Amino acid sequence: MYLSSVGLVLAIVVGLYFWNNPLKHSRWFLVRRFINWFPLGMTYAFLYMGRYNLSVSKNALGTLMSKEDFGLIFAAGTLTYALSFLINGPLVDKIGGKKGIIIAALGASFANILLGVLTYLIVAHHFKVNLVVAFSALYALNMYFQSYGAVSIIKVKAYWFHVRERGVFGAIFGTLISFGIYFAFDWGQAIADMTKAHPGGEMGWLHGLVQRVFGMATGAADAIWAVFFIPAAILLVWVLLDWWLIKDTPEEAGFASFDTHDASSGKMDVEFTALQLLGKVFTSPLMLLIACVELTSGVFRNGIAQWYFIFANEVKQPGAEFFIQHWGWLLCIFGIIGGFAGGLVSDKLFQSRRGPPAALLCGAVLLASLIMAAVLFSSPVIVGAAGVAIVMCAVGITSLMSGTAATDFGGRKATATCSGIVDGFAYLGSALQSFGLGYITTWNWHWWPLFLTPFALAGGLIAIKIWHELPPATRRYIAEVEHKRVDELKGAVALAP
Image 1 (tube, one colour):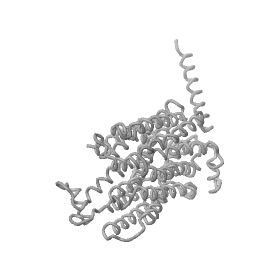
Image 2 (tube, helix red, strand yellow):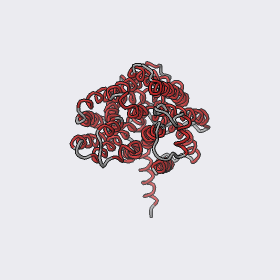
Image 3 (cartoon, rainbow, N blue to C red):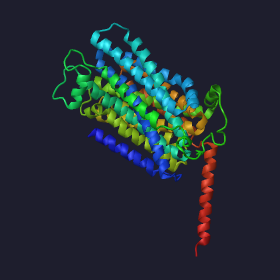
Image 4 (spheres, rainbow, N blue to C red):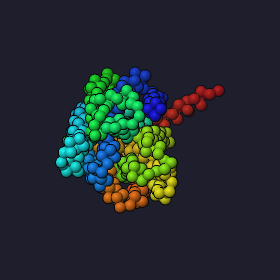
């Protein structure tokens, strides 16, 4: 049922993609662009599965990995992810998004295989190793390659989507994040359940196949390592499809040159050095403000997505078992709603300005986190619902900031660097919450939602500060369209009897 609903949502997203055509592209252009972004996007979603499987393994490992251990390991990975953009952003701007996504998938697959081997040695053979150091090193390697993913998908998007279409593409980007969370938590947990040494009840064909592949039909240890090996195998399949189908630009696919009216309009012949690309972010007050909004989003997105899963296992939630059993599915569905709400509101109500919907979403996070804090130990259903609402809003903010605003103001020539640095700030926020909540929740869970509130407030205030910002080329384009519309109305009035 839940897999079917995810498939239905994907079909609706694809339908909305074809429905939203403000620039009146040809049918073949829309189809070819879909053939481009779908494999690119699904690769990105499965990268998420190979990223957040660490949370599934933490619960499966039990006392072998404490909350403090998990916080340190996840923080090491997210900090590596954030800093990697100083290298990978300018590199992807040079080599293109197609090569970037292939590097991401191959590298993350290799790192997940190593994590699976390490887990196998620890669990099955009682291999003596400093778990925090070993997992941190391999998870950091995984996250280094993972960091190629977002900048690559956004680099390709920058050439194929006009600024006036990017709010909806930002929603698609949020959808891909949401699918990845679903794959990681629900599919990952299903894999962990299927590889138990002593499964209860009858096994279906898939359950039996997984048991046979990992040699755990009988035995004393659960095959937890499968949560790393299976995403690694899936990523390799998408590498082949990416190599075959993706084109970096419309021109490479046989279309005419396409001006997207972003910050690179009229400057496509300019070549930037790596330092100049980085300077476009770190010397731009506007880009730094966008990055700071994304930092706050990283705090409360992973502050909930990661820790509710652990909280509900540690503090029983009577009456709210549905949330822990279908956490990935819930985050998927509502993350998609958040992404589309932010993107559509931006494009349809605010002339593709990204600040207004981001401010509204930060306000909703502030309200939800305060409600969550008030009922944390008294109303499990409200706690679960508030957690889902916070992630929904956070995905919407990420879609608007790193998925869209950074591209608009960075332009096609610098989009990987700009979106990468902005996304890196999200993972600096994620590292901050991982370090902080790993210790705070060990001391007292009540401070968990309260930890998020100042970041939601700060994000909202910064988003208000960029409320009216648009790239100059976009303003000119909107003015030209409006002028043309007025002329058409005047002509229609003059012709009227």
